[in-house]
Picture 1 (tube, rainbow, N blue to C red):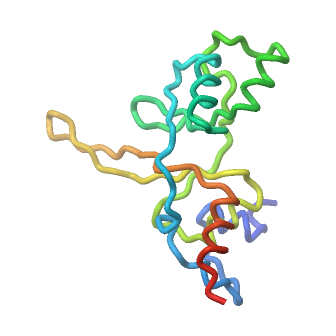
Picture 2 (picture 1 turned 90 degrees about the vertical axis):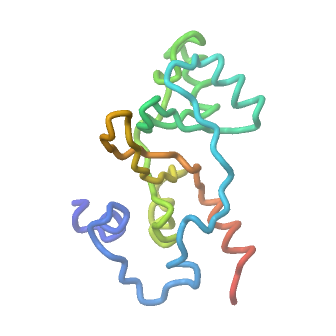
Length: 165
């Protein structure tokens, strides 16, 4: 039934948005949001260490990214604490045991309209950018770089600060 849902089709890039009365910010690119650099955790970080880092740095959530650049998921302070307290994870377990692996990615060149569609169902989106890299043999490969995590509050703040009405 998803293929008949226009919002799902737009979110997943199968359909261009044809909304007639778009707000002034609809076609502005995600890169204009002025996101701060994200805190990234590697998969081997323990749940205990993740909690300490998130609290110390004042973050609620952080992407978990493999050395290769592959985004594995998102760890949140509340989910980590809940999982440990419920006995589903130990403080010593790697953070990959408590990550959300269902998440949306959005590119810097995507529109705030597309982001808005994603944020109707998801609490956040991970902002990524593909970058070509070369190894010592001259072989090239694409690597995803995480530029930030964007929430509905980030979008609302941008719209309210720059309201063109």
